[in-house]
Length: 69
Image 1 (tube, rainbow, N blue to C red):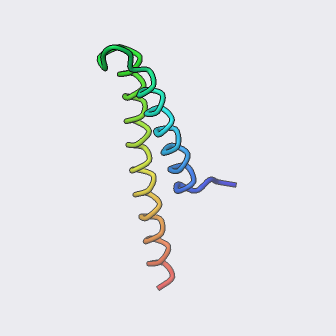
Image 2 (cartoon, rainbow, N blue to C red):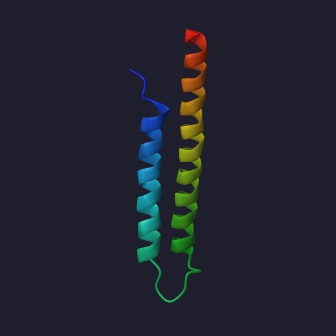
């Protein structure tokens, strides 16, 4: 059984939120430490994948509706 792009998008969005939360908690004296920037980078990648998967979901949905007509 294949997983839907919308389900995977929700998982990636959740991981992005978790990485953002951990990055906010890891800020000590300054924002510009390695761990904070690394976590923010991973969160950015997760949010980008989320957007791409949501777009893929809508493309598949449009293709299925065109095939029915």
